[in-house]
Picture 1 (tube, rainbow, N blue to C red):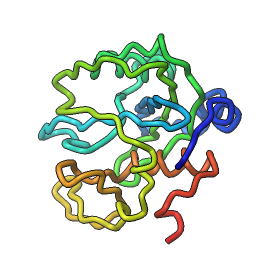
Picture 2 (picture 1 turned 135 degrees about the vertical axis):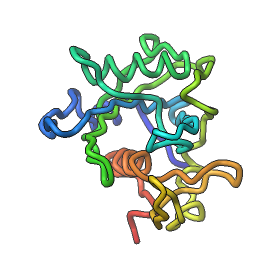
Picture 3 (picture 1 turned 180 degrees about the horizontal axis):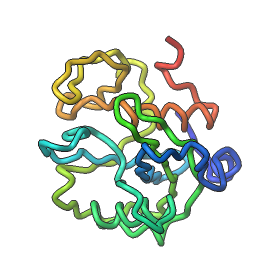
Length: 196
């Protein structure tokens, strides 16, 4: 069983967001990774609603969105989480920040704030989200779920590392996959695909 401890997470994550990768031609979305039930933790995911002009349409991800003028990384993560799934993160503990992830296909630098929810919050999704769910870390890190999967991005068929959480859900891949990979590597927990 994989276990997480709040003290270790606080020591390992960044205490302030890294803004050194900010560039005028790149947007800086901010997302929130929510944990619950430590040490036998679960992670919260959303499935984005399908929209024609959304490059992440239908994908599994974390709640979040574009940083507005005058907002901090944390403020955006908390505002977007409240808007998208009605979870008020002012009642949760901010454990720290991951290093920004540079988009492979789009000009973005994704910031991620990591929170510990003291209890499983009530969720109400808005029009930007089609569904949400909590997922066990032990199941998430099952090596049998990891493979290179066919995915579509802006009408292009690609083969990318991903995680098949269930037959009913889309493959978890892309920026969310890379944020999870960074998180578990920083926790010194083996991420199955990183061994390939």
